[in-house]
Length: 64
Image (cartoon, rainbow, N blue to C red):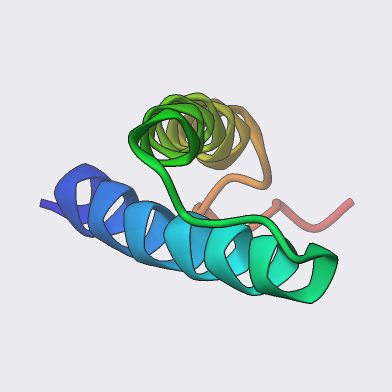
């Protein structure tokens, strides 16, 4: 479920950023921009999931 929510938020934030950056540069939001932003959202989601799985463990560390 968290992977799905990560994909949803990644999709929304990536498209928002693509729209804002395109508007600031004077470009229009075309289907090519949509495709590029969607691919970037999937890549970003995969990166975040890998980072989350290989990152800091949830188990507390033992005392030395």
